[in-house]
Image (cartoon, rainbow, N blue to C red; front, top):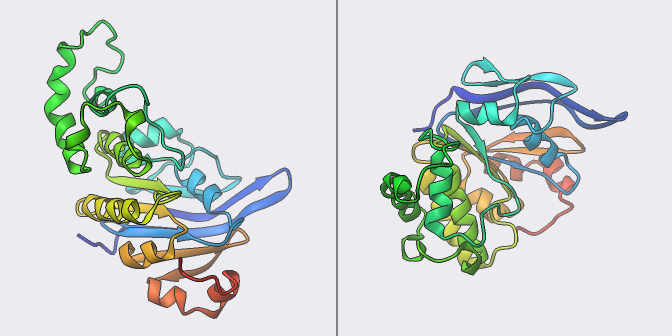
Amino acid sequence: MVSTQPILSATGLTMEFRGFVAVNNVTIAVNEGTVHALIGPNGAGKTTVFNLLTKFLTPTRGQITFRGSDITPLKPAEVARLGLVRSFQISAVFPHLTVLDNVRIALQRPSNLATQFWRSSSALSVLDERAMALIDAVGLANYAHLPAVELSYGRKRALEIATTLALDPAMLLLDEPMAGMGHEDIGRISDLIRRIARDRTVLMVEHNLNVVADLCDRVTVLARGEILADGSYETVSADPRVREAYMGTEHD
């Protein structure tokens, strides 16, 4: 359900690299239960902001709040345990394990089995029901016993999302989930994100503006490390500054 209350917010976010200001005084709020896109031309600072919000970088200045708590000093694993979980632009699955095994491994941490290496495979079968439910949720039920390396690129991304959902996040951050995909895979992953967003918040960095227009409740546009526009897709796409930043690029 869409809320007007932010689940994740940042105030005055600034990141300097040896005197170069990559992100300058960015203030952003992602409301609970929404799909929020972070877009902008190449070099706009999207990835840096994304890495700051997920704590893979520590800001030079500024504050990040998640569910009312200051997470600015925390490490990525600490914020993941709070329910803020990200995916990566490059698919991160174990290629020679089956789809089922990939998801079972992801489920071991929330099930307190992650460090119990003496557990037999049969003992971990307690995770199978939940694993299969996640696999079915991302449309991979027919591929559960197939090695991940044999999946198409789009289905590997779906598997990665399943492993991310295994942590039961309140908020999911997706880094260019449609990158490198064909039309059919884009449609499949778009539908998946739409289903995921029914009961959690999603923030995504995405270049495909058709996907952004179709999926997102709110859009933040970055240019040269600063926020250029923020609002609905209709609002930001009509902004002359946004059109200039994209230099009239077609929505492809």
